[in-house]
Length: 61
Image 1 (cartoon, rainbow, N blue to C red):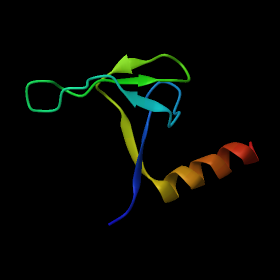
Image 2: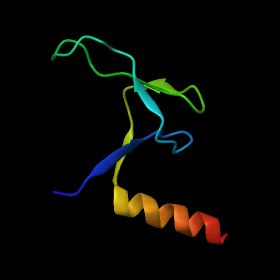
Image 3: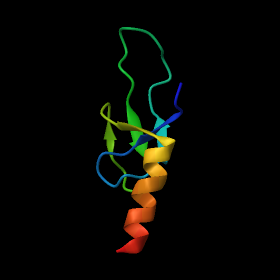
Image 4: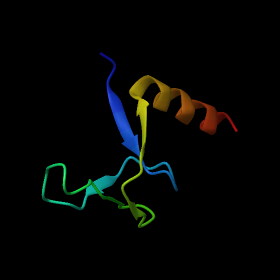
């Protein structure tokens, strides 16, 4: 099973912090990005290998 990482949809940082401390089906998970301050329940989940490729391509530019 491939390992994945959650990314902020706004700045693509992996520094997401879980805001909700109640787990269960009544409380949706909300995250806060420590880089840009994004708050929300939407995040991007990518394979670690894909993240490495994205970083390499960004460095080439």
